Length: 405
Image (cartoon, rainbow, N blue to C red; front, side, top):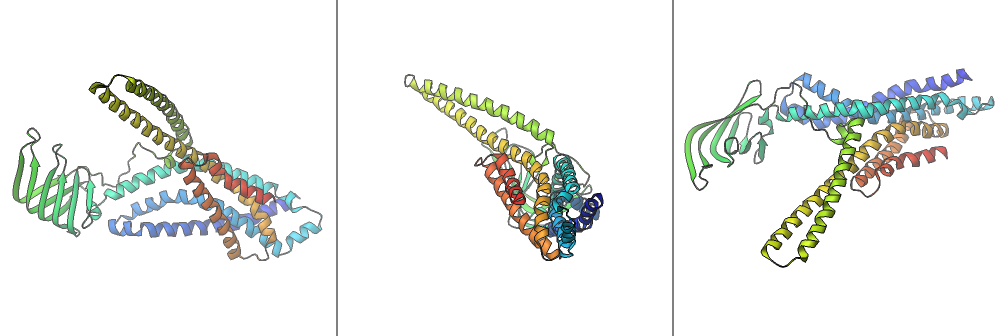
């Protein structure tokens, strides 16, 4: 009996590794297609490209591991069914389902590892990936200045009719670096030079004029013509040295961070709810007072404060829903491994072929249905249409019932 259990477990190892490689490779190809234009346009060094794909790999594994488990289960039991091994086991008076204990235990263990992966490792790599993408966006900034489009970086907004690697024509620049009134600069042509290893940008403008208002005397407007004017944009942060920003989105938060953020948002939401009630009462009492200019001013002020409090409440509710969805999503995707094992066993036993194509086809359909249901539930939960728990766990519950049946 123990030999048979080990044999069934062993039969899953090779299909799982092969499936994991294939599925991850397919997702990686899709990622390469998405980033190819960016890599070519920015002419990124190979170290940055390797880091970019290395940081993209974890979120691919979060999807490819559950799917690989499903493919491996269907393949393993499908092969044993086609080779009449299942018939031999049944003929010996052994119930096939009594042999799957170690397999389910392994699936549970893998689920625990995926919970750790999704709640601690993955958020940190997502955060690093976002920061790297921000760095790449500013790397060689000339590549982000598109013809006939307004491009903003640092305190400057740049528009050019045509662009090349170093030349701009019919240039318009809004310079907000000096005063609170933007300085508007027009030029026929401009040359762009990168300095300090791409950390600084020098824009040399030719044959133009500069329009500016006096900050101390706003009524004064000055126009200056020039043959040559230089703008230095420093500290772009375009070196590919790694850095971290403090802000994290819900997908970049670890489990403790999600819990802490949920607690803080719920406390603020409760405070805003009480503030809204108090403002509504004050507004009603103010409206009951004698008509006067002072009363009208106070009514408008309270209405504005009330609207701001309601808007903040709406934002907080959306943030709470989003955090709750992310909390349950990482658990539900991890638990999907056990579900896929349980549904893959009967599918493999019912199959009439051991081909990998069939296993991938069936797995793809099941995983596609699961993923669409998960994403659809996530969107509805973010809008508050259905509870986050239901939206993230409904697919697992339905597939579990199907597996049992």
